[in-house]
Image 1 (cartoon, rainbow, N blue to C red):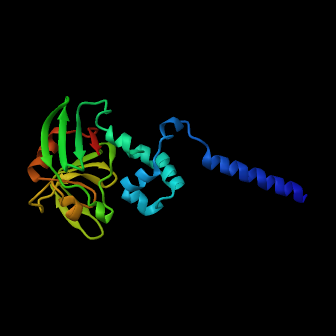
Image 2 (image 1 turned 30 degrees about the horizontal axis):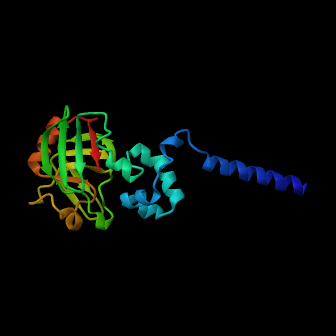
Image 3 (image 1 turned 90 degrees about the vertical axis):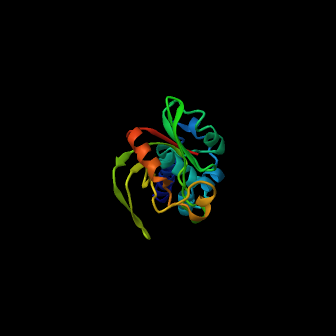
Length: 206
């Protein structure tokens, strides 16, 4: 009887582990996943999972792919080049610029301020789409409650919007006085962008 119980427990354990670690059908899309890159690129994920490679990999499989997060540096570097569309919003974190491409041509360009990487608020990198457009909204958080005239959300609570409390954009401002993750734009730019993009327009952050 004890032998049967032990064997049953062993079979259950094997089945349980198999369920957890079954290789997904899209394994070919994730076999070059870089845990170190993923942890360093996404501070919000690192804050929860640290540098645990298995947890980071599982996050990418279950959430990161759907959210448009990059799996390694090479994919991030080729994010714009490999984009199969020619109308999209491009946010370049290193250069602190926002460019809107229409049919492959830049029709709107501006400096911006992205999330502060030194406070764990880096703007998420990846390929997204505009999820909603609202002409006036309060952005509320633990320590802020601000009104923006033009809100264009592309992932989670992150979006592009005007920031009339700023007098300067671009440069290295984001490293010391960056946003909580959103892409801050000059008021005139935010108005213009809002008027020419649609819900569903691609947003590439790299």
